[in-house]
Image 1 (cartoon, rainbow, N blue to C red):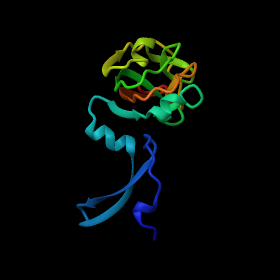
Image 2 (cartoon, rainbow, N blue to C red; image 1 turned 120 degrees about the vertical axis):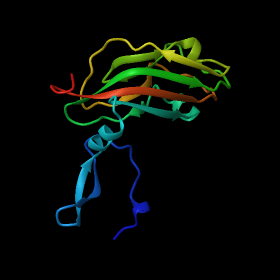
Image 3 (cartoon, rainbow, N blue to C red; image 1 turned 45 degrees about the vertical axis):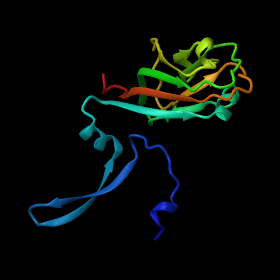
Image 4 (tube, helix red, strand yellow; image 1 turned 180 degrees about the vertical axis):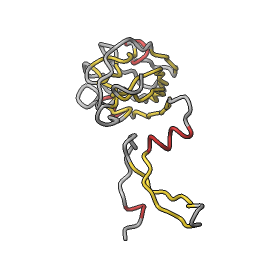
Length: 172
């Protein structure tokens, strides 16, 4: 049997299964079951909202025009990410040179943006993004992306995102 630490680490999605047990009070035995991540989170997360924080290194920021940074992974078939709020902490450092706002998006639809002034800041700051209306597409991740290169800046970003997972036809 493999050691638990030998398995790769990934971000969980709602349809993932965990192994757990329950005491059968009639027979006084322990029974093993599978539990979905979604069912467990619904026990502890009464408002249905999840908040996640994601660090973005300077190397990742420099490559945003070529490689999107996944902020929230795709949740599965018929499940969409509804962004409630998003904020970014910019550490400052050597200035980036983005010519267009940096965006958070789902399947190409902007869910928030970081203006050029804040994305290229040389001083530390916290910026709260305005979340616009947009299509909540199912089974797509929420990503950080840039339309063009941002140069060789040295600052880092930390994003805090509050979201809910909507199931088509059920969670409205």
